[in-house]
Length: 186
Image (tube, rainbow, N blue to C red; front, top):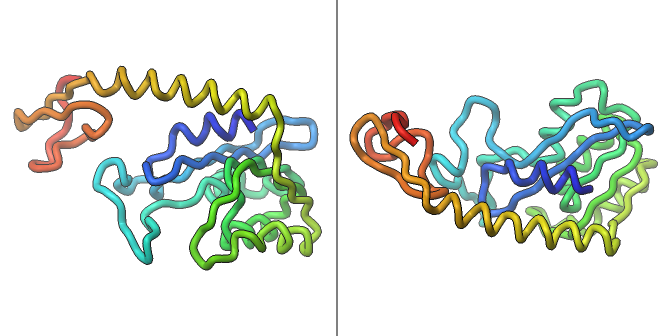
């Protein structure tokens, strides 16, 4: 589960950082995923959220990304996710042939069916369990402390764009939002 939380730090939608890891029976990592925009498309961090019914629809979910990157290697694996999968991801988990799902936190996703996802997965023959261990609690606490330090450092960084504009901190993207010019110094 720790690796899923590390994957979540790469998320490109600041509404919720979610991570997922697929592992084999002998604990080898097959794929990781985090919530973010499809490859080659602008992320929420760069252009903002694309909201519909109070949900950002610009991003793919962490579980979906992990399944996509694993391809056929997902069959028979165990999925660790920082959140309970949404109903759409649960359907993909079933089709991918994943055997076990462990998640940390409950999250009410769109459709209002998140509380039914564990039962849906179990009915499909997939073991599904919420993890709650003292070690995981301590790990999340330490990760949160490290993220606060990183955010403080990142807030001091200034980027200069080819157009002469500057961007500061974590909101500074790879291109100037006003002139669409790339970073020249950072």
